[in-house]
Every structure is written in C-alpha cells, then in structure tokens.
Length: 90
Image (tube, rainbow, N blue to C red; front, side):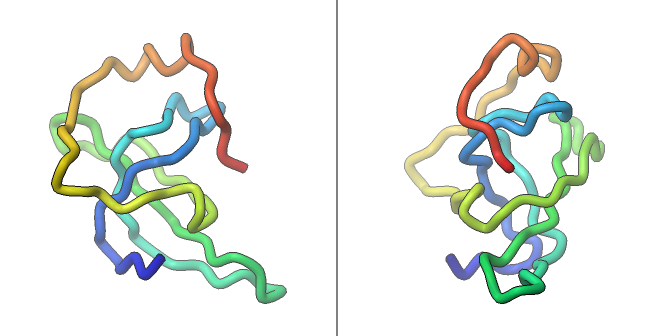
C-alpha cells in the first residue's frame, strides 16, 4: 500500500475491546515487518476530536486504507462503538 510513517489512515474494520470501528482515523506511528515474511503490520495511534491519544493498536496493512479527497471527517461518541458490530480486524 505504500503508507508512510505519520500518514493518517482509516480503519477498514472494527477492533473489539478498543471501541474502535470501521472508518475511524488513525496515524501510522510504526511499520512492523512480519517475522515469517507475511503481511506487514502497522502500529497506529488513535486520537479523540481534541487531539488526545486514546489508543495504540497494531493491525495488518490490509486493515487500513488511505484517506481520499472525496471523504469528509465526522464525529461520533466513543461509547457508540460498543453498539455496532461490523467486520473485525484480527
């Protein structure tokens, strides 16, 4: 995918136990090679609307997508992620 450090990406799936869901925006803070030559992983930091860090998670590169110029950011309550079940990361 060619995502660089500190790029912002969107989750393509929900992350159970972290109240994160598909479409949430995160920042790539590290790239992690697979120890057996498999798919690369990313360490992501997720921030709230005020810019405060709320989570650091590790996902597969295929679990995120780059942001596009035809997308609009939105705000949701963190607690609302508990109510929705969608595709799940790892």
